[in-house]
Length: 200
Picture 1 (cartoon, rainbow, N blue to C red):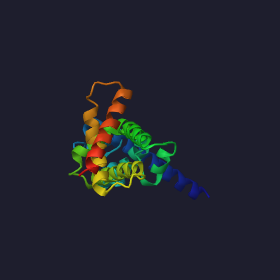
Picture 2: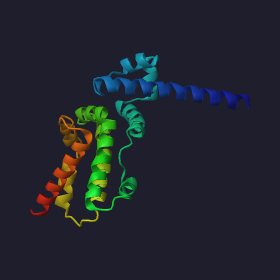
Picture 3: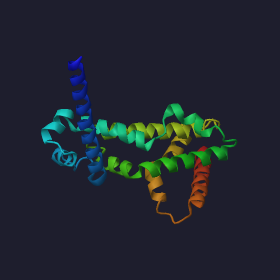
Picture 4: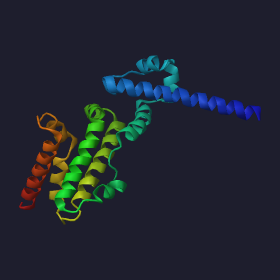
């Protein structure tokens, strides 16, 4: 019984150290990006030795996956299994586009800093590429659901995906309009782009 208790306490302590390392890594990644951050810096921030970091996370990929699970929970990206509920109250095709824009605006605003940093290091860290690929799949699923009633061809869907990408959203953050006006502008641009794509 006493042995089980000691083993449980050791496991709890190990989990706490692991969590400290992940939190330290996430803070440093937010400050510097993934690739420029060293294990030595993470160890110092977490208050542990570099060997402890390496014991918990033998590779950068292991650490990025652990951080990614936390980031995913915080960012709450759209997921293919949950997109239908976003449009439950939308009555018209325009309502669906408005909901699409609003949903993506909220998500991109939550994740903008981390999405930009991950994109910068994407080609260097396969786990970041996997994370962003999953994010992009969720965004595409949201777009497809928004247009599910239209019967649009694949090229039209891909135009909508392009116009709702994080890269395009980032450019719109530079437009000096009130949020409601910006939403209306994005919906109008999306409507016009879809109309043009349907005529090709």
